Length: 426
Ligand code: PMP
Image (spheres, rainbow, N blue to C red):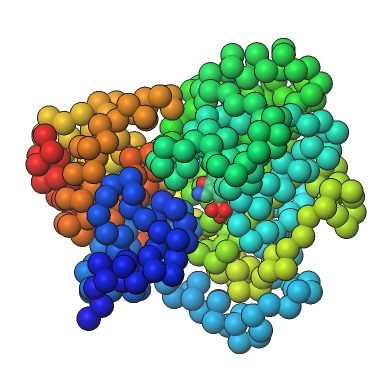
């Protein structure tokens, strides 16, 4: 039998920190990362054969649960016809048509292989389209690892205490203006300071990389108004929220329409995919029609398209989102009740199939509140949950992810584990 500790030692000899994505190394919670051997439905099994109820969901993509038979069959079938062509395939059009049908303003889609590439490409497109240089992003929002967006970023970049990365030259981020999420005045001030210079405002419409933070009423309406007024593009980075908080993403929930959207995660069903989407008048500025260059060897990969299509088909079934949202809300209510019983400053909330839990008495509205959590208590809570077979994202600044495979049995087991863990950390 393999052993997590031995596997971690082995991995560290050949992989930087033993991982291929920083936050997987468990630095924010301590201890040994679990090496996953397989995953099915709501569960993952590590190499020691231990089973976990999974709330990581590969950080978002696995909304129908792991190894859904229809998704796996679609990928197998596609694989039988070749793994990659570097030439057009019809699955690309099929998936793009589905995305266009779900978002009224989206007329064109460009697929990439990651969320990073989709945010980076949306940014280049916004600059190319407007002929402007400056961008506004928000503290605690994460848009992948493109240099100019890796400023005061959330997720792993935040948990590691290096909000900005070494290796990103000052010159590259000179044009990145960092505003405060849920603080419209901080954005307005930039437009006053830099009239006609701001190409775009990029935002996670429902923030998920400084744990889950819901937007204040009027915040996005205000961003929409400011962008329109000043000729800047509003970019919603829906890599995490798209097809997860609702079928039509955060833009459907909020009723605010961005100029461009970045997608990823769910639209690849667990395979590497990203996308930029928007109206033809902006999107057609991209190569080969326009001067904004964008390309990718594996973009529109047939296996990834097949996995995305099968996943979208499943989540488009009538009632899927109502049911998954209702169950996720029941889990959250159970966690809040466990906190009340234990008398711990802990709470949880959800939006659709996305959720957050916090070592705080009430859900945070601002980035600073997320940072004010009792990290030591979170670490203890985290490992008690993990030992009880519940796998949460290994950091107090991450959201967690629910799926259609999480049923009553998994919800009840999670709530039971939380009762015990919260009582122990009280
Ligand atoms: N944008 C958001 C909102 C994300 O949550 C992420 C990844 N967590 C990214 C972009 C980057 O995506 P990827 O890791 O696929 O490059």
